[in-house]
Amino acid sequence: MACTCGVDGIKIGSFTGKVELSDGIWVCVPHWKQAGFSTLEATKYGQQLTIDRFKEILESGRSGKEYLTSENKTSFQLSTNALIQPNEIGKLQIAIARDWESNEEVLIALKGAFKEYLIVTRSYLYIFKSGFMTGHFVGQNRFKMPIANITNVEVDTHLLTGYFEVAAGGVQNLPRNYWSTDSKTDPAKSPNTISLNSNLFDDFRKASDLINELIMDIKLSPSTSVQSFSKLDTPDELRKYKSLLDDGIINEQEFNAKKKQLLGL
Image (cartoon, rainbow, N blue to C red):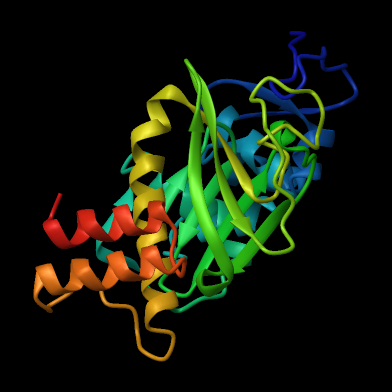
């Protein structure tokens, strides 16, 4: 019986060959082989994949066997109080497994509107992007920036959409538009930005506050490890940061972030 391929919706010819996936969707043999499987492995691996997972393999540029193996591995270690999206963490770990290189605990792990992933440790900020909507038909892009080199991060929001942006020396910052078709102003396609839907605003605002605190701590104590909470006297600490603000060493956004941290707001 004739059927269509679940990848592109094109009718599968009689001589093309097809493979049935676990959700009852068929894919043509050319796409099956593109994912790194042989026809002899159709029964073994077909029943392990839904059409959505199969499409993720094709978009990632990884072999299907590597993808399935990485599902059973943890690509990074989360800190105890990490800011994460519980429903997305499994997919996120799989998506970046091939390009993850750090042994540091992850403080922030969030997914944007498309296949855009923000990962933050105490030393580095990473943005991983893959998929058609980010301009990647195969493979993915990795943006990596030492926390110490970042000027600040911020979330720009409108009614229903917005974007997260990293500002640093040598990084081009332009006004972005979620609906833009220009790769230079589309936040999904820019390496240092992540496009957001309104349901992501709160998570990324929290992430921005945490990252800006890390930046400020490194600026103020470049030769010491980052401390999560100050144990010094709060009024004295506030006076010290206010003096730094008045002298122009830190900006108002950085001062307010530290003030909130010290006051427990």
